Amino acid sequence: MSDEKNLKTQLEHLLDNKNVRQKYSPAIGKIIDMYIDYIPFLIREHESGKRVAWNCGLMSDPSIFYGNGVIPASYTELGRLGAIEEITKAQDHFQIPVETCSMVKANLGEFLIYKDRFPKKINYSSHDCEPYNMIFELLKDYGYDVNLFDVGFNPGRKSEVRSEEMKKHYRNELLRKIEWLNDGADPDIEGMKREQIKYNRVQRKLQKIIEYRFKFPTYMSSLSYMIMMIGNGHYFGHPEEYEKTIDDLLLEFESLKEGEYHDEKVVLGWYGARGQEFNVYETIDESGGAILAFSLPNNPYTLFDESLDPIEAVVKFEFSDRSSMSVAERNGILLNQFQKYGAKGVLFYGFLGCSLTSIQFEMTRKYLQENNIPVLNLVGSFDVGSVSGQVKTRIQAFIEMLQKENHEI
Ligand code: SF4
Image (cartoon, rainbow, N blue to C red; front, top):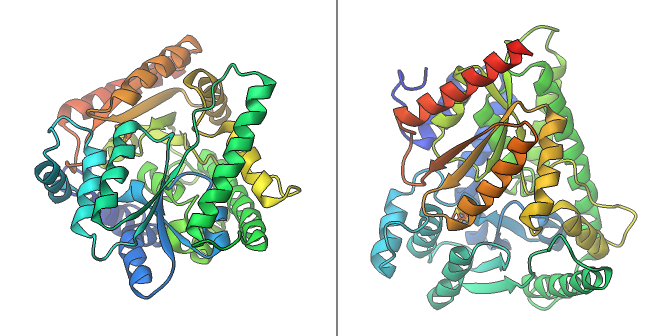
């Protein structure tokens, strides 16, 4: 058990996954290595003169960024491997109250501490939360070139006319964003097309891995799965290496024999933030659960329409099931995703101090429960390495309840 090993930091949990728990899998080890090196790699690339720009990591931007010769740097990954110093810096420098969301503070602190080494371009979207948006406005005073991608929420009940207006506005903002990214140059249409084809190809491979995880649920831990899926939009800065590693992992799965790595598991869904206290995932695995349904803004089942001009393909992609939708509209999509994976229960994970997700979670929790999917709400923070015993007990009790229900059916 991870606690018996006394693992404390996120990095220790990752290394334990690589060197002990899944030592048998070179591909999983490679994914973990890419993840650990992602932010240092971005800094090295920036310092060597490559074009690197920050963006919310889980949106459609692989085609916009890579397609135009820019490496996407996901600001949602900042602070993940330890953020106490960053949080303190943000609190002290800007007098930010302690109860403010730890993710916002960790990001702000890191942008301040590394301002002389970080890439300078930051793109953020108006459908990120308000505290997040405000930190990027603050960063303009610290030498960052900040672009606001000004697209609104996509309300569920809208007229056809309104829908067309929104798409038109989105298209215009997209062109303006690419112009900013390219320092005034035109979009590289060929490059974007190539990246959309690659993105679709990679997602199809990830879909196969998800199918294999149903067959061999204990081969890959829930934490390693989460890490792999985090990279499905930006490939940790290494598109070729990421795809090759996914190919290698597929080969590893293909070589397994029927019945191997197949302890009985309760299939769980995960919704909300990608958790920060990594022993949550280990507690789930060790209690008889497996996260197979991981709800992502970039879910691997939504692909670019390759028959369209790439700009139009991004617009269509974004107006399918992206995170800019209303909660009511997204609830239906989430339910479909969790049912598709056969999730018996769903874990919600939000950060302390986040007013946005606490209300949204309540609406989604009610909806899923009405559709017979029980939910456990977890609240975490960026500045701790492991969850408390109380949280572990709640997870264990939740999985036990689902195991009992499964056997009674
Ligand atoms: S956890 Fe909430 S407040 Fe924090 S960045 Fe995310 S949406 Fe914003």
